[in-house]
Image (cartoon, rainbow, N blue to C red; front, top):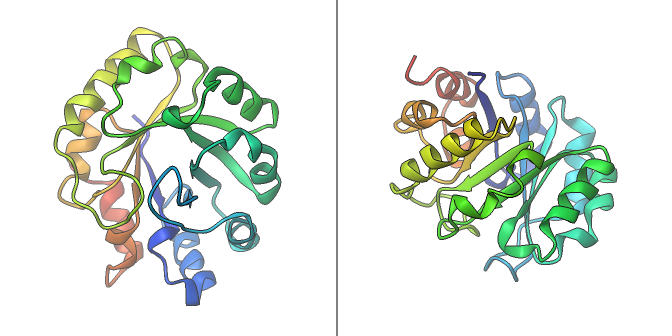
Length: 218
C-alpha cells in the first residue's frame, strides 16, 4: 500500500514560510497540507486564499487543501485558481455534499470528505465511490498540537472495510496528533496519508523526521 506524508503548514514558521516550504520540497513528503479555518465551523482562524497562492508559488509538491469552513461550495473555484490539487470539505458543513464533490471534480481537482471525531463512517456509504480521499480527524478540528484520539483506530478500520467492500479508490488520510510513535500503527490500520504539522516542524531535522514517518513500522 502506497504511503503519503503531507506536512501541515499550519505548524510552520510564517515569518520564514518560504524556507519551511523549501524544507518540504527537499524531503520525501508527497503533498503540502493547507488547513483553512473560518472561525465559524471551527473555533479558530488560520489563513486563506492569499497564503495558499503564496505557498503554491514556491511549492514543488501538490497542495492538499482542507476547508474547515461553512458553505465551502462558495469557494471551490477560488481555491482551484489559488493552486489546490486536492480539495477536502467537511461532511458536517455540506448540505448538498454529493453536488459539492462533483463540482470539485468538474473543476479538475481531487475530491475529499473530512469527518469530525463524532461523525460515523456510515455517513459516507452512499458516496464512497465518488471520493478520492476520506480525511479522518483524529483530534477535534481547530487547533494544532492536540493529543490523538485513540478511538480513531477502530474508525479507520471500519472505513478501510467500507472502501475495500465498495471497490472505492479513496485514500484514507488522518490529521491530528500524528507522531513517530503512532505512525506505524496507523499505516497498519489501513491509513494511506499522514498529515502532521507539529511533529515535523518542531523537529531538529524535519527532513529526517518525514523519512522516519514514511517508513514507520517497516
